[in-house]
Image (cartoon, rainbow, N blue to C red; front, side):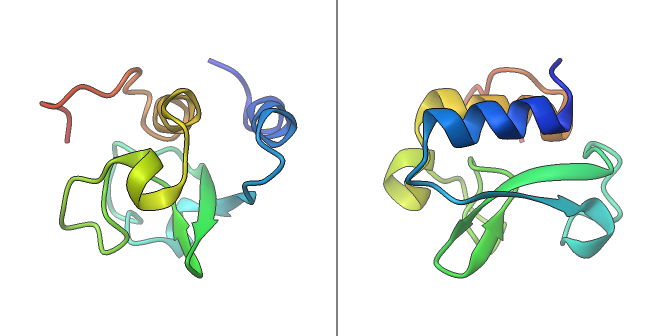
Length: 94
């Protein structure tokens, strides 16, 4: 798995039109979720930091990363893998 800064730089270089940032898990809705890393990569979309591109911005629904957040699938999978260690998203993944 790539380090946070390496992946962040690669995402920014590959998708300069998207605002990628880091955030500490403690500052997110996932603060008590052991599946998430301590430093997360997210995308700022509609004034919300998205750290799981496969969830809606409220975190209650499944989302399509491209349609709902403007995040291409490869970037969404890389973010998910970094943030949760889950690897590729599958429909049965949380």
